[in-house]
Length: 204
Image (cartoon, rainbow, N blue to C red; front, side, top):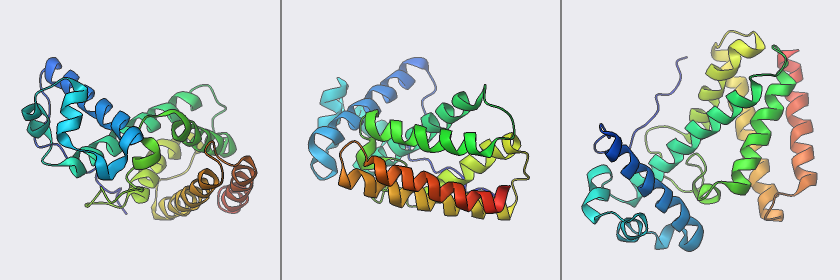
């Protein structure tokens, strides 16, 4: 089973540095406005004004706000993957528990601090990713990232295992943040315990 290809919502990919910097400003503005006004009140015109770019610059990259939110979800996944990889750089090779802690801890950190993440995360909160299920996209990315680290082949069984873990963590973490704006620590602790028990059965 091959990983789900990463969707792209860009009408036109930036080539020059100046264009890439403009795209970054647009996505940063989108993230900030999501926190301030929510998805329903988000508009391409407001994003352009916040980013300090002409409205045409937004439409050069995106046809509508849904595509813009999807691109933000994709950027979140890239940044999340980088954070997990950085966290594991000095961790003992083969320790799947350290890998699981890194995966959960970095997700919680982004939930608490990354602008716009509470509304978009990787595409789960609003229906932005039409071409692939967000949790499958996350699970496939983590399988590719972690399989070598834990000494396992990234086969269909491992992908299914990580998909179940991601779906479980996603549901329980969202529950914890509904209970407490910073994430209910009791539910987070039980999530960690549940994931360890499930993964131990498969990975030990």
